[in-house]
Length: 418
Image (cartoon, rainbow, N blue to C red; front, side, top):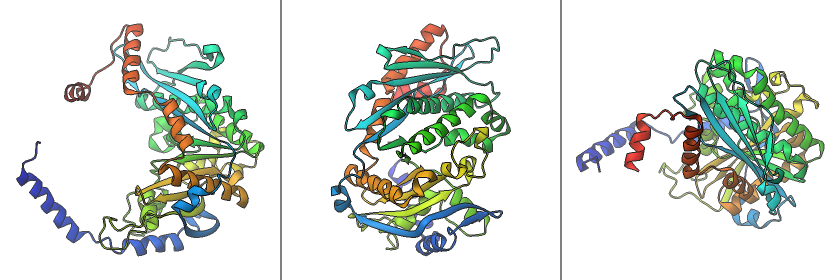
């Protein structure tokens, strides 16, 4: 242990000082006021960025009851993509490898066997020529592709990561869209938010977002929504770790003293039945009911790109532009003190019956699994590249490229300590 008892006591003293100066007892009333007075709708410069879909209200359901109801869909599919994480080599190459898989409930072993793998490469050598076609192996169940990333002066690692992850996921989804009969749940947001956020992060990334390769990935997601909605199939994204700040940022811009670090903290405060007790710990939190919000339209932040008045990065939309808009609801599980955000296209959720079926399915799965829907976890397991596999793949690249990966101090530090 690096801290002596006197150090621990000193830190505890700091916590005591902070406790006397930070009063969160009024946060419950503020959260309720923000929900009731500011979200119906929430506007920025005259434009609606958040608005209720249907009646604005907070709801709850007994965990045991919703876990026992018949699931609203006969079948459900899950989709995820995992990567080895960006790797820089001494010869100047930067690459990442993403591996996508789809799971089914009930199980479909042939579908589980199918995989799509994308390797995205960034190189400063303008003469580098890479093949761009899909190559199939394993009797057609496995396919791989190399993507040459657009050149950037900075952010090469982030670029290869986002392009690999989202191309593998979206291409695999389109490849197997016809196998989905009732519902497809993406592990993560409905659209490639990390890529869409490039528009606001930096001028160089903003210019890159509209280039052909990133735009083609966005088009994959647009086509996926069109194909599934065209067959009356539900599609949604289950966001395990939502980090949106649209509501809290907008409230602060309007002069509301919003104390929450992001929208998840706001909704947690709003939905947690254990808040308002004065303990601040939730030790006496009831755990027998899931709490959740109504559905909302989201047209700000990265979601503005696929809003009805957004440009979709220039991608043609075959349906009414409003059908692609992001809608979401938030569910809180008091057993784990966790909030999840569920996103779906407005073309699905504007229909009250379709919206209710999807909501009931999510609540059922969260109640049963005490976490993400089981089919999402299954897809995550299929797509995940393990630590040992990542290390082996990096060694293989080093051997084939005849170039070592660039090691940093933390790489050596963690190797030694663990």
